Length: 214
Image (tube, rainbow, N blue to C red; front, side):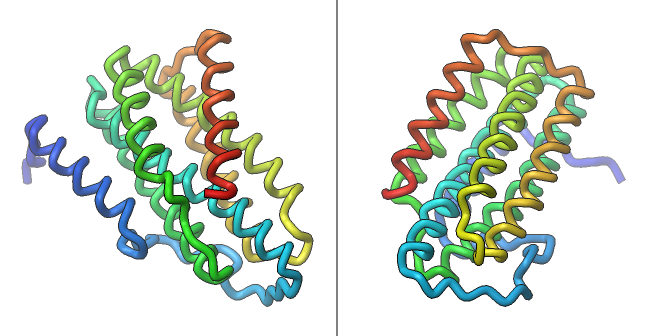
């Protein structure tokens, strides 16, 4: 059977639907079981609970940004192989999104109020990267995933020792993100200029600092 071809307008409507589902708590369901869900975990200290909640809120927002980036880059990709790779990665990132949200609920916490802003900003950045060309778009993904892996490594070191449930989630996320970065480089991703990498790092720091609390 011939694969249906969607128009640009069709895909824009689909992006709007993805935005609404990403913002609506509990709508996105993971395709994979959540890592560490069966681990006994008792965070009795209120400060530890608050700290874990702040870290997982950051990671949830990071996955909101990932959805926006991948969707925008899939929308603007020139080659069908690049588009399919972006869409596949977005599905795996959706698992991460659902896992982080589920963990926040267990901690009796919430997602960030700033998520719509970060989604919009990330979508715009992803669209610009996509319009620059598939090689630049893939290079942007590779660098993003490198920075995310370093960020996750930092969070793994900062989580309360007893929070093995959150740790299991972050370890699987780190594994997936590393694979996404490797795939992007193998797919022809270009090395980004140092200035762009630095700007990406600054933007990430602003996001993490604000999202921990808001």
